Length: 625
Image (cartoon, rainbow, N blue to C red; front, side, top):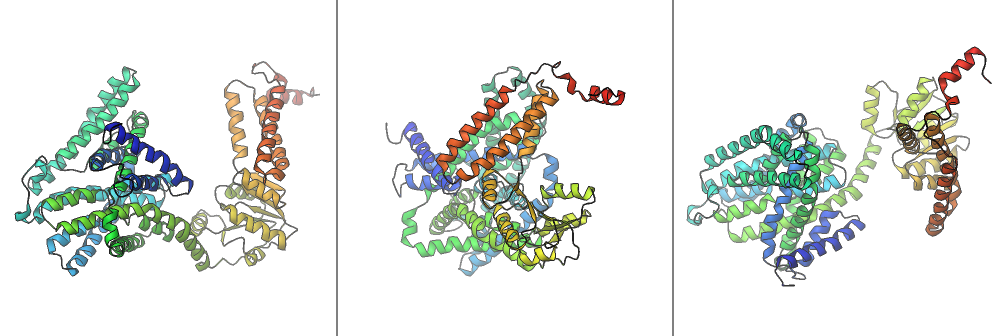
């Protein structure tokens, strides 16, 4: 295999990803950091398996970012986009302006000409759409306030790239401008670029609304899956070509194309067809960034470079945190928001190329900013980890400490700890039957919301002995524990068993291992949160397939009884994983054999004596036996 050939490069990139990404996931570092480390290892500074061609590959891989924005656009209907308008224009606008101004001032203080300082400020105001959105999606944070705000700011940044590209020629030093080359459209006047950009956006919206649907309809009628996939790729590539040709951000164009098609009947098909290409190209993009980190340059002055990287990220983080506070974001969400967006973005590479072409600042500064950009992107997954493992727990603890628990003046036979999606159902049921309950919850936002809904909920950490005493644990009969955090649940169980042994504990378990932990502590009443719902769905599925309602309910009940018994029988073997697996396999086989032995018949005429109508008639007539 020839070094530098297509297959050689593909082999190196894929092998690096296959080895490093699972390792990174295994250590809880996320796939993005895995790709970046893979690129660093195969790059010229370590193993040297890839060389100059990595820059060409990065241009190709940037198409993955375009696809990602297209898929995100597909998930966002225009109404949702309209709902985010305050965050997009407000938070996004303030972030770009404030960050640019701060770094502009710092640039002037370091002796940069004002034009170069403006360019540096604008360049540093942008963040990495690819890394942030991918990481937020992996961690399930994209729908949280922090995720939505991050997305809104990133969207504004993508839009801001258009006027920034138009502004850069105006900042140029004429003596440094290189001859017009193949990127001729970018060499046009700034106002012309802006007009062309607006025209391209209008073309994408109109084309997406009136042309794309008929085309997909015609292609779908052929019933050729590969042709539909080819058409989907053709659409994204066409958008990329249109936007690139007018100096517009291809990612922004793809996003708009996706939004236009969000209400289309082909939305899900498009999404599933593009998803594999998007993931593969995004991975290649991250590997290319890792490979582009110049470790030799970093090694020459490591303290200065890492100081610059951390300084930029710290300043951006502080600005973002202040913006989050101004827009009334909760401190925990604000922390995630600031950590997520504090790096520089992939568009900085494009702007650095422009800046060099127009001689806006010297090559040395351009080289430094290139390394700072790549390193800040590489550090982002680690920042997410620091936020998740160190900052968030401290914020939660501080919030719980700062907010004084409510004074509880009532005594009820039942105390409910945790009033989220599980505990609230139990609480409402008991309230409906006039059973007195004292409800405790340590989520301040939830407590406030529940109070607005007219529910009486006390704020406080139920695992605290003084709060349990204040809630009347000494006089109560039952303690229902429905907390979201398994560790907090175990602490509360321990506290209750130690100080209030008379209380009957009814404890929610999130899964089977949770249940084993509780059983090992001597808790008799353990409730796995999804077991009943799953069995009810299974019974409904059987009924829809033609089984009688009685048969379906009966098999679900038998499954439940057997599984609950197996849970308790297997609890002692949980510590020995091999013994547990062997015993669990026997119980699974035993259950299947038991249910098959019942010989359920899906004949609709079978077992009709259980019909409630005939049963009711027999009772009314007095003929029931």
